[in-house]
Amino acid sequence: MNILVLGGAGYIGSHFVKKALEANNQIIVIDNLSTGHKKSLPQNIKFYQGDVRDEKFIDNVFKKEKIDACVHFCAFSLVGESMKDPLKYFDNNVIGAIRLVEAMAKHNIKKIVFSSTAAVYGSHDKMPITEDYSTEPTNPYGESKLFMEKIFKWSDLAYGIKYVSLRYFNVAGAASDGTIGEVHNPETHLIPIVLEVPLNKRDKLTIFGDDYKTKDGTCIRDYIHVEDLTEAHLLALDYLNKGNESNIFNLGSQTGYSNLEILNTAKKVTEKPIPVVIGDRRPGDPDMLIASNQKAKEVLRWEIKRDIKQIISTAWQFHQKHPNGYGEDEND
Ligand code: UDP
Image (tube, rainbow, N blue to C red):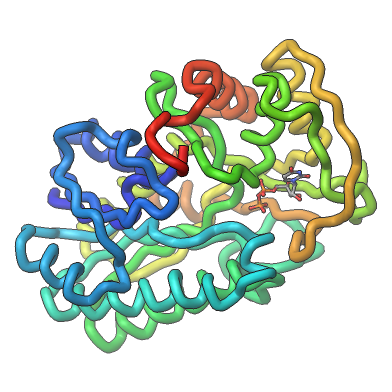
């Protein structure tokens, strides 16, 4: 099928593009390259540089290209930054979704798969989290994604645009062939940061808080390999192509690892010492997030093929091969 991938030069977007091409789809990518990397995409890809909030730009792409479905990855996604600058998140994420739906409605595109997040749930005591848990985000990033979900929900009723919202838990790892991986500048995510120590890019890891209500006091998260995650997007497109109703799915492994456990696994994978200090809590962090993935397994027939060791070892392989990221500009 002809898939318009919005935010296709980002970390998850570029891994989706790779998978979708391998599955013989035709891909058109839109990205404003604010955080994405052109070099994470195949050279001959159909690529439009621009912002999803730019009405004329989007309209022009929809006019020019034959599009069967959209997969929407463009969003800012840093919890800490969103606490300091909430309006940046509402502007980019929410306005971007509105402009996109307007263009889809105008050009009669009726299918979209989009990135949501576990951050829509906020803090819950009982794990794992099923899709029917209440949504009470503890940070503006999660709130902006919840707004996006609501925009798609009401747009389904009004314009008949069917959506699948995929609520990602913690995505990490890199393509198994080592060609693409996670490159953010600045990096804020735990796994790539841990690996910067054995790469000699930082001298120690700071774990943000050890007084959470968890077994070792550090936060617990549910990590999912980026290739398992992107496979779920192709299954979600199949699901929509079969004429199914709009739906929401968690994407996680249903297994939680504390920040200290991630550190210890990284030490084993890299076979290097990784010094650690405990710092202050990071505002907005819930104690624990673990997905129930039963619904995605049952309805989408999603399978998880890679475990935490593979997540960290593929990331380690990528970063060793690409110590300076994609080596192109200030977003390296
Ligand atoms: N974290 C940490 N030190 C770091 C980066 C992250 O202790 O340098 C913690 C963070 O506070 C959270 C967990 O690692 O408890 C996962 O954070 P990340 O930013 O990777 O993902 P998030 O859960 O915010 O989406």
